[in-house]
Image (cartoon, chains in turn red, orange):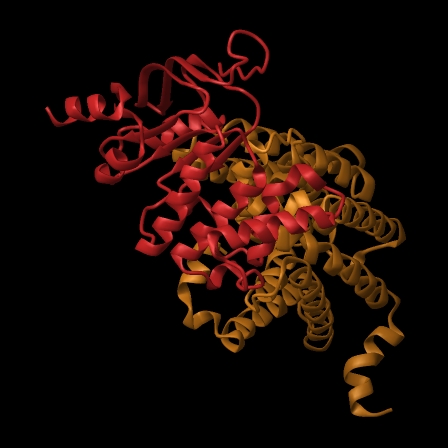
Length: 231
Length: 286
């Protein structure tokens, strides 16, 4: 079972996976993956379709049940699921969607205070959504929605960020803005794990890489991990 | 008296049971507007339908025990509704065959309920349980509807934000470390609302006044709270229209109200242009 404790050996904030196995029915999605995401590391997760990349993130986020193994992870997570998991028909505005990221600041009952609204405005500015906050989310382009979800993550202010295909199907300009934010999170000392397809981007910007094919094929510095992938 | 008065007012003026039915329907319209809208935005319409039928066996056992008593029918219905909801919760992980399992629950519940009622009662009782008896609502039943409506609306008002937020992105609240089981609380509210609707509309139709006005309101693409209010207005309109139709044409009142709701849904789809944006409907799963 997934254990998620702040105290203990991993108080330094690293995420440790031991023998992590996830099944969907009879199909094994992730088979005995072990490894460690160090605190403050920036790691890409790559592999073919169905290799278990999203499942790995879902397992760390606690939304996929482990059939075997354990995951130690510190404190709160910021999780960017694949866009298909977001109901874009839901009748809400961009600012409402983004504000959900600051849930801990107001919870189920209180209204967001002025400082939280200021943080929302700042986050919108970072992702280039200023002036589009009153739009309905069903009127957004794919890139705009992804920018909004990034703004929500900024408001969440989590020490660990799990990003599932953050740049998939977004325009180049958006991808550039979002990549800059990923780098900012990394410079802040946060742990970032991102599922990616663009291997050139991984080589350029991500120091560490995990290569998955249900099992863990390689886990380490990007240069070495991807060399084994090519071989 | 003008003809409009005869057509629209006189039936309620002259007949006590029509007035009681109208008041019950108005309360249910407000209740169903809120619960139905949340069911739609949480994409749980199938769950709602299954729960409506899940009320049946328990209500039947209540009927066997105490005859047609509002309280026992409701308590029994609530017990079996919650039991099926719990079973549905247990299979929530098995996405591949969840729909089939839910359908199985509802067919078994329906058949079991019918058999139990026929065992001790008559075919008339079966029709009562399946289609409800809006025009036979009495004071205790009206009081019960009023109490359930008040309680459910107060809880929805208090928990509005998490109940609504859970619909956009179910994993977000979990990732944020929110531990309160809002999904479970919502299912309990749905069962309560269905039990309140059950005696008016029966186990087969109870989901109709809950979903049709809410779906009609959703077609207009308002925010969630505004959509709830519009659904309540549509529910009121369908109730008044259905009751008058049943009075003047001598038709069964529950089905007439559901039919009126269906007409409002169709008109809303046409008038709001939703039909010409089919993607929106497909994703909604309504």
